[in-house]
Image (cartoon, rainbow, N blue to C red):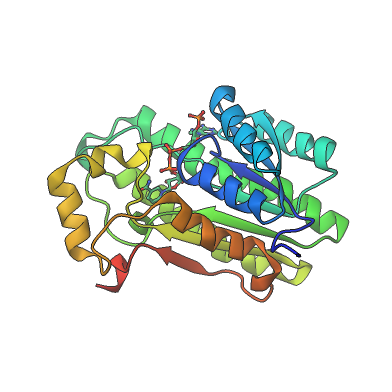
Length: 253
Ligand SMILES: NC(=O)c1ccc[n+]([C@@H]2O[C@H](COP(=O)([O-])OP(=O)(O)OC[C@H]3O[C@@H](n4cnc5c(N)ncnc54)[C@H](OP(=O)(O)O)[C@@H]3O)[C@@H](O)[C@H]2O)c1
């Protein structure tokens, strides 16, 4: 039986755990060949092994997405291994400072923008540019956050980077749409991963979130992955420049 991503080659950043790993596993289960990137190999290898054991095709490549030469090497590697790409998921992110905006350390500010904004922008230009040059269609999915659409107390810099991805999504969608390159964005709410442990392990923050959320619970990485697979697939062929909340109804309140 045909699968939703048969024949697609997809690069996923931050694929060694959490939401990125769930996206990689879901995309491979739908027939995509996936290239998994993150800084450290052991986590990537474990996810790739899991995919291969389930009959899927996965490759790994270590990459710090905030470094331009590393980003170019990653996209060259996709060409070398797969002969190109059909999808890009900008999922990797960092959030090194949790505290009042007034106390923001500049080193943390710079690192957060480098990984969360410069990396996805550089990857989008590398991958999107090659698609345009080759006259090839493609789909980019950016993983933002509800904190890019609402105030982000104690996470000012992180929230700003996630708002930047929303802007980037809309602008690249407009600039690249006529070439057949689609650019969309998901904004997860609180999802049960290591990244969110500081929040999910705080009963007070957890309650504040679940009280405001229609579904009254945090999300699971697989629940984000399903929407991303849809946006990578041809089911969403006429959808671009859109922001999809995957937040159990948080933004609805
Ligand atoms: N969890 C949530 O509640 C939540 C909510 C809203 C949005 N999000 C967004 O969802 C995405 C994934 O988050 P998550 O919760 O799955 O996080 P996670 O479990 O901490 O995973 C983060 C991934 O990014 C990789 N990574 C970190 N820095 C990197 C860098 N400089 N270069 C390349 N890879 C890097 C990590 O691997 P290495 O450490 O090996 O590099 C890891 O694979 C992020 O964009 C995050 O902002 C998460």
